[in-house]
Length: 136
Image (cartoon, rainbow, N blue to C red; front, side, top):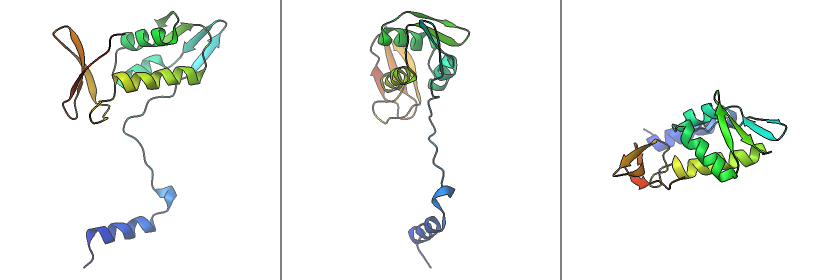
């Protein structure tokens, strides 16, 4: 009788690399922008906020502050004053995820904002850790 590990190794050897598909449970939608004159519109803004489980308002405040510009939300789109590239906006979204979405203890994206004594905290639903959130 073979051990479990031996059987598992044998099964993995028989699988071709193309048969193994790895997908992360947490995927951030890639930004989709349109430039119109001196404005940049993030077309899938509400989709990104929903995927991150954060309010559009909080993500909006972070984006305009970090990009150093003004803007507004219009029908699920974020309209920014200025010309920005997809990579610049994607970098800011990734930084937002690192600061305000991922748990600092276990790295899980399953977090939520909770207010404790006038302090906004991130609570991890996976491990239970709590961390204070830096104000925007």
